[in-house]
Amino acid sequence: MAFKFMADDRHVQSAVRRIALDQIDTALAELGGLIAHEKAIHSVRKRSKRLRALLRLVRPSFDAYAHENAAIRDAAQGLSLLRDAEVMGETFGAIEDELKARLSQRKLDRFQSAIKARAEKMTAEVDREEALESFRTAFTALRSRAEGWKLSTKNFGALREGFQIIYKRGRDDMRALSHSDDAETFHDWRKAVKAHFYHLCLMRDGAPHLLGGQRDLANELGELLGQQHDMSVFRLGLETESELFGNLEGRDVLHDVLLTREQALGRQALAMGGELFVEKPKALVSRIESYWTDWRKRSEKADGAGDRTQVSRAA
Image (cartoon, rainbow, N blue to C red; front, side, top):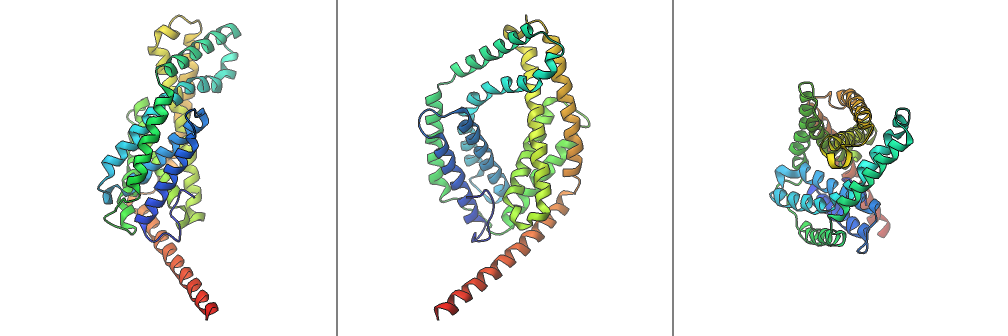
């Protein structure tokens, strides 16, 4: 079932339960047996992020937020090393063509060997079966609790403040980058952008033609910031993991390519962010609420008409 609020949801509380249970069930199914492939692990981590974004949206109305958010975060953290071990290799592949113009194949091969050794070392530090089983246990318990989740407000009021907080955070984080464009500030902005994207996904049926472009822009920006973050993590590893990279020829060239690409992606992201976050938070929330109210009214009228037709035919 789609990751969104739907016309036939009785209210926000029932929708939140439905969406959460679907994400949890799909995550458990994707992991399958004891041995899950990398694609499944990546997908499950994304579902964990969706769940946390869902909870952030209703946080002001959800008393159990802190406990459940921590439970999801901790469960996904156990899988992070299994995924992160692969990221440096993928990032190296993204800049390999540029490196080939400046480094010999022998030097490139030595970097690839070092990256492979690093991935093997990281993977060896994790008991794969134990990590997967721990995740399944945590999500099975989460599912039982999610069936009874309660919100203090069941209409748009349950969404208003959470939506505005995340959007404002994204706007503020983007502005902070004009004073400090370090990797950590960019990473904080990325998290807010991804959460905002998921919120737009959840609310997209309220005005699909109007919110579709905004959602696509948020998604593209989030992906761009993800690439930039990967470049930053690789660059930091090159600077700090001397036992792997310290003696390799061409290290300065690799560092320069990573930094140049990282900075270029950052500039591109800021240009896109200027479009995404141009509207003031209260104005955007007011607009979203108008879409939501009209959509719910139309849905209720359609349901009513359908019910009357059903009764008429039965008579």
